Image (tube, rainbow, N blue to C red; front, side):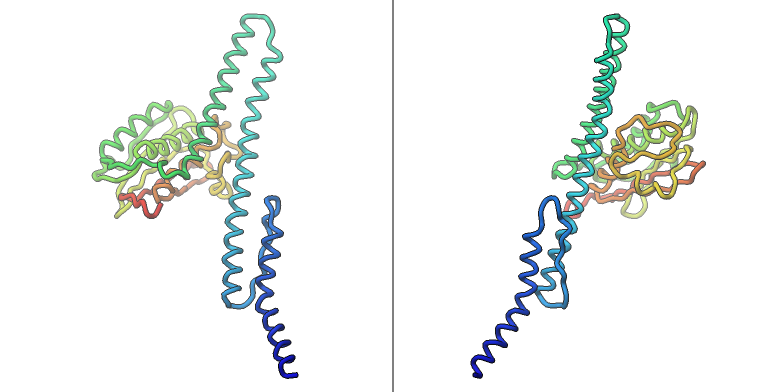
Length: 289
C-alpha cells in the first residue's frame, strides 16, 4: 500500500514538473511561418520557467524580424510597381510620331534610372548586415570637413555655410560611408528648401566623439513624424514638395551611423527648420559592432 501511495505521489510530482515542458513542446509545434504569435505561459522562478522566458524573448525577436522583412518587401514592391506602371502605360500609348517616341524614350530612361537608384539603395541596406560593410581607415578631420563642404556646395543653389570652422583631430571610420551619410542629409535639406535658403554644415569633437550636423531652414518636421522618418520608405507629410528620392535616404544614414557604433539625433520645429546630428566614436570599436 505504501509503495502504491509513493508511486502515485511520484507520478503527480513528475506531472507537475513535466507540465511546463509539455507546454513548451505544444507551443513549439503550434508555431508556423504564418503564426509566430504563440508564447509560453511562464510562472515561477525555476529553470523551466527561465527557459520559457528565454524562448519567448527569442520568439519576440524572430517575429519582429519577420514583420520587418514582410513590410520591407511590401514597401519595395509598391515602390517598384509605380515606375513599372508608368513605363508600361507610356509604351502602350506611344505612336509613330518621332517626337512622341523621343519623349517616351526619355521618360522611360528616367523611370529606369529611378528604379536603378532604388535597387542600389536596397542592396546597400542588405549589405549592412555583412562584416565587410565598413572599410575602416584613419580620417584626418580638417581636410575631411573641408572636402565635404566643397562637395555639399555642388548639390544645389543654396546659401551654404560652414559652421565651427576648422576641426583639428582624427577619427577612425569608413570615409566613403560617412561621406555618403552626410551627402544624403544635405540632399534631403536641398529637396525641402528653396533657392538661396540657408543650409549649415558643421563638425566638432566632444570628448571621445565627433559630431557632424546639417541645419536647414525648411518647413521643419512635426514631432509625431520625427521618429518615423528614419524608417524605410518613409516620407514627410505635407512637405513643400514631394521628395525625388526613394524614401530610403534617412534609413541609409541611420544604418551607416549605427554600423559605426554612433547615433543620429534630430531637432526640428515646424516653420523654422531641422538640424540632423550624426555622432560617431573617434575610435571605431569593431567588437561593439
